Amino acid sequence: MRGLKLTYMFDSQRFNIQETEDGGDVRFRIQGLEEVDLHVIMQRIQQDFEENRVITDVLMYVYPHQTFEFIVRQDFYVDFILSLMKYQILQRITWI
Image (cartoon, rainbow, N blue to C red; front, side, top):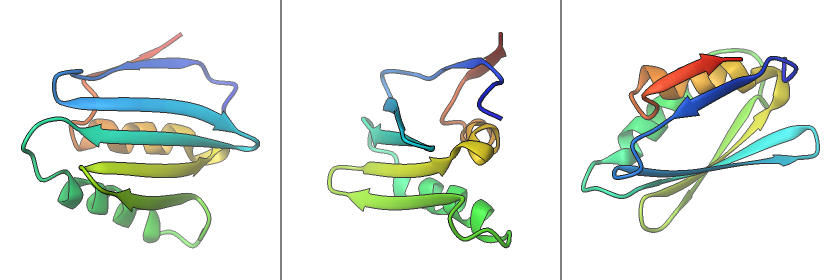
């Protein structure tokens, strides 16, 4: 699914998002920059993926200072991006 090209926008005053490819996976490092309880939102995103039967689709790691890392299998990339949009982490997604 990674053959699909898309870009996304987020509010850089509220979040810092870094995306890097890591072998067959994509790593997202997301940090909340405001006093928003990002932990609850990130848990909801993780729960969205725990409801399916694939154990290794999205893995979440929690770090200090409202920082979260997600390792996303490439075949779940679009689903993960849509989940970020669902919880208003992203403002816009554009297919190119």
